[in-house]
Image (cartoon, rainbow, N blue to C red):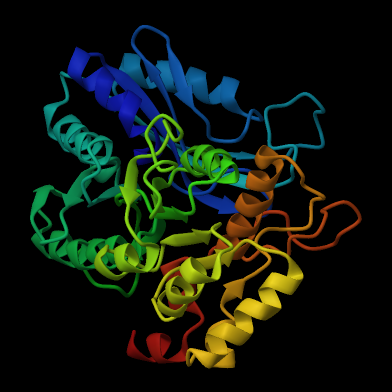
Length: 389
């Protein structure tokens, strides 16, 4: 649900009632992962997606129904080969969808969800936990948790459950992760009669593009499309201007390695070095390859890459550190224009983030949608955890 928070928050500000359908579980091949959502307003407007089109019509009707009766429900959709035109996922997967009405008349849950949407829309970190399977009186109940442990809402007369979920929500938030959790009604992590969806809302990951060249402008647009907070940095003020990079969130005129040394990065940060000039590249990459970031890529020919690696070795980098460098940057798409090169770089970033191979899916036998193991799944297969329970 938090992936469409901007628009939903505007609905809240307008005082509109709406229902939101959220993917809470996925089995097999499916186009959307837990947390993906479709919402329908009291005016009939629909936003978001839960399946890429396969079941949207049926989910729309479920949302309209929830708006009318005020009831939360869990619905399963899967592939049907018995009826060719039946509602189902043609990709062969199964998804569970939680449909929750957010109505001004239902203050308890609606206030929690509205607060969560405001936090997500304004870039605040928060985790939203909702019961998706369990006793009818608890269905749809929600608890919002801030990074400092502050909470909003809860699960009624279950303080032990609230306390346990806060701890789990903080762990999910720290990892920026959305997943389901199985837990006992009294807060125990054994004998799990309840299933919760914990959605994490964290500030957008950073993409820092070093080098104010024409390829950088296209990459900035691509980075914004992928949901990054994009910064452009270059030491040359004549090129590093808002007029040249209107889509950038931040423009910095400074020597790249100086800026990288003072700015905040984390394990989701992407660094793209497009300067291909040793006086910029070497000190910048010497620092970048020792930082705990998600991706470091550098533009240049294969000859430039070999020369740059030699300079970096002379500067003290090890082969292990150099192995983190994606250079020449991007996947082999035969790209030539700045826009094509941006697609090539973005494709490599996505593949690196999601564990993709970067090869064509045509004729392949690997999974299209790479699975993300849930906490409950990890626990179920861990001998130490089973012994503890």
